[in-house]
Image 1 (tube, rainbow, N blue to C red):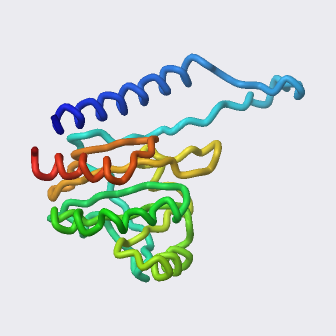
Image 2 (image 1 turned 135 degrees about the horizontal axis):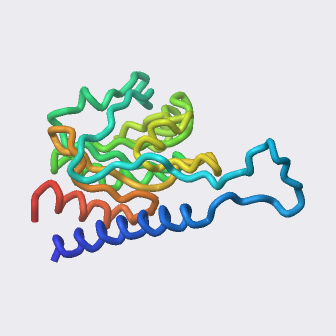
Length: 194
């Protein structure tokens, strides 16, 4: 049953990504009706995400400042299962503390990634007593690398990526927010194979 649920979620995520990609290709340039277009100026285009991660491929490497006061480099986490949870606001990452004990028992290291500065994330983690390291992606480059940054809105999109001990993406849900208990079920299924 869990494998079926997992397969269904992955198919829905892939179908949604395919539909949004096809829709953005068919739209073409968008111009405001109130502003005349000059022949020399390019018409404004709707921004869309250029990158994306795929299950079965190596996770893109990165180094980000963390809430513990030191940078975190993905390459240094090989040998561990790693869960990257993306959100636009630090408050959206606070519920990670509810599933952190279960993740730890599975041997999964969780990291929250958002657009706030490292010192703000450090204060938030201390105030909320978060046992999870929060990572600062203020430029949005890493979120965009993982297919989770909307350049037009300048915000990190919700999603998560589970990376195995060899650095390979095992589960990815991009652009959708999933309740943390359902995320935990998918992670458990991927790690234990049941």
